[in-house]
Amino acid sequence: MKKILLVLLVVFTASSVFAAGIGIKGGYSKMYDDYADVFDDTWNIGIVFDMGTFLFNNLQFRPGIDYLSLENEDNNYEYADVYGIHLDWYWFFMGKKQFSPFLGFGPALNYYSFDDDRTNNDDSDAGIEGFLGVDFDLSGPWKLMLELRYLWHDIADRDTTIVKLNVGLLYYF
Image (cartoon, rainbow, N blue to C red; front, side, top):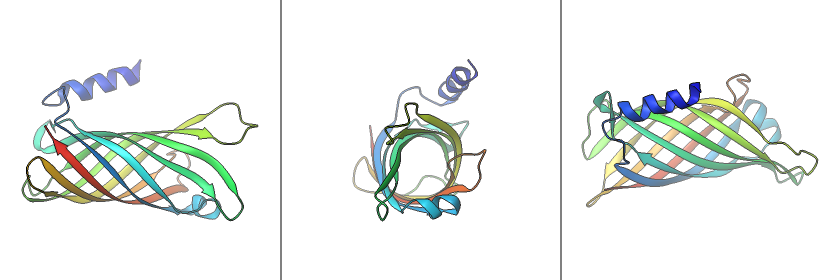
């Protein structure tokens, strides 16, 4: 029940209930700490929705969904596919212009789909992310986004960290 109330609070405090834009992003994921000992660096891909401003004009709410695979190719070991659900807030501290740098943060729910046949149940962990980047206005309704994310996949186990370097293309309605 608490999760539903949180989602309703976020949606109805945004300036509009409908998405102002949609985009796709992807990039390189570098494993650190305990993940670096077991898993190879990999690629990630995701979808982001721009829901408009949140509380004030320079803060935007952009939830998203992304995917990456935890595996080790040297040992032919596939651990899990990870699907992340993100509730991200982007602060455009210099305003929205042709070149708009931002800082951001947001919680994430990481759902693990295990590849091991012996594991019948999947799992999920709460995570948190901090990021920075820049939006570039392209022609018309298009924007190019570059971002660097630092994420803790499991806030209960702070040694499961990943750094993502992403490039995205956003389309605004």
